[in-house]
Image (cartoon, rainbow, N blue to C red; front, top):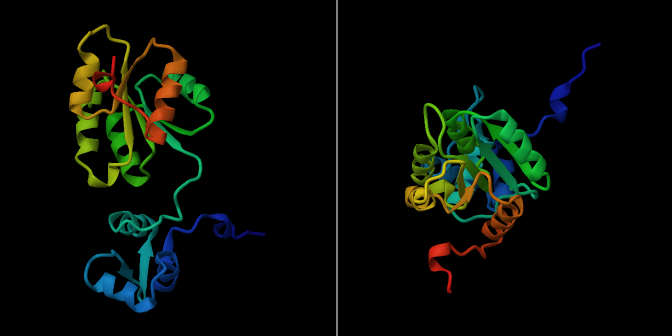
Length: 201
């Protein structure tokens, strides 16, 4: 006998009444925002508005409203063309919800769908390198809260400065101390990180 598995799936589409509750607003306000183009929605064949989760979240973020969908566990996306590195990173950062991606283009798509709290980016990769990924991420206004850590095993003295100039918030050498990376992530998440160039002697 077939079972209805859809009941166990997370809700991805909302009615205007659902949206009103989430936004702590009245039904007419939701309809007005839709008509004004502020809140994206589509109509069912029956003429009823439906709002996709990603559009509702974008609206909440754009207007500084609380996001009830915000995960309680901080999320980290790891971009590296070496799957073994990703696996090791995920073990190291097991206290966080980690996702791994081996391609720059795939990373941009994933980040656009579900912006993580931290993005760890390997600088030297085939096709779309880390510098370009960082630049494209920094062009997106809705990613201003996403912190970017660039890393590399290349022995180039100016690499940390170049990655920060590209838009990264911090740099970590790939062969560096893992404890330093963990502390770096913690400081970026709680807002206490200070770039080396501005630290007092």
